[in-house]
Image (cartoon, rainbow, N blue to C red; front, side, top):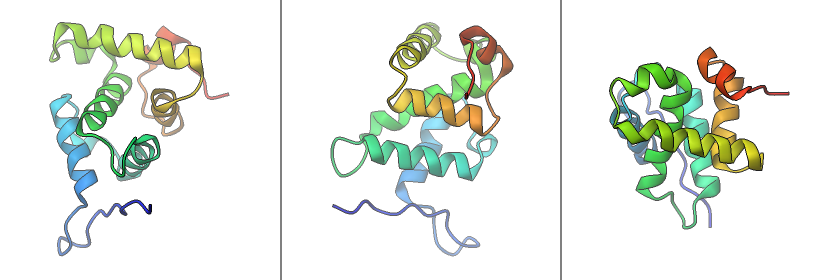
Amino acid sequence: MARSPSSFGFMGVFGRSHDLKQLDAALRAADLHPKLVSEAVKLTVVNLLKDHAVGAEPAPQAYAAAAEMLAYCMLGPTMLSATSPPDLIQRVEARIERALGAGEGLDAQLILLTLHAKVVQPEVVDRFGLSSE
């Protein structure tokens, strides 16, 4: 089955696609303003979510999980902990540990994306010894 294409819109005439709107909403919920995330990163994230979806489209909670990972990597635990539920930092850090142990999967790809896009916080790189080599 062909997946639905993502669209940024065109000069305000054509609207953003539903998947990008869902990601923007999830980023806001994770306390990361969507304007702080480049459109290229967002498009890559929705494509990764589609690649890992069980059905035709990613589940709504997949957008939330991806947004939490991006928020952690881009803001760092110190800044994120000031505005997030207390257990969020531990949950995301556990996901990072599992992703680094497995070396593959959606979370590993999201972490690698933030490294390659050069939007990951140095604190996160140091804490987990991240590199893209």
